[in-house]
Image (tube, rainbow, N blue to C red; front, side):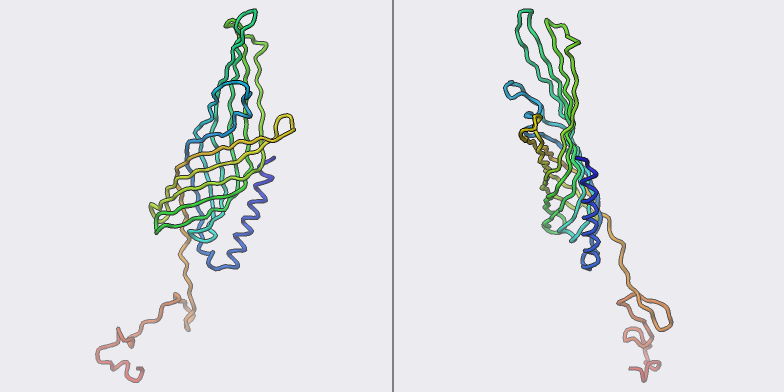
Length: 272
């Protein structure tokens, strides 16, 4: 399924929630926009079911280096946010081989495979502060994921390659599924944070014959930074009798104020 077909309605809905919240609840006006990103070690669980014949005894390399970026808005400062997330779990590459003895000699079959998973989604992020600097967080959301993969088959007989039997095939699996993450975050400055996170994308897809469904999990241990944009200072003012304005909460200072009136008090007699 197309990413935009899923993401755009989700973004519109999220913005509607934020707008309604800002109008109806003054506490949300203190929320702040933030962005961030990180890199990490990715792994694919059960991905070999898509690539490898289970009857063959082969080792499948299912690890890679991935990265993620995100942006969000605090609905309830320090506790609840809505986020847009994009994660690239990196490319996995493997080469599987099988040798079969025939009357003409040994036949070597090599299959080179590569694949990459990306996911784009929207989530709610909940945080639990432990003091002013340390906090734990978790995300739960729905995403549109895509797995692009390529097969390349080669056949060798007695060490010579059969060019006519060399083939290359590419395809894509995609769908919408849940994802989640858990992590810890530490505040370095007023606006800068560092974090560590475990991010997991669940992915279910139809088998090639269309008769059943299979699944794999793409996950990543990431570390990164988050930058939070401070809101502009709020100031309220009110008009004075002469038409000028002064900040709310302040007052005019005169010579008759207790702290500033003249020593003799002559100027303020009759005004106390």
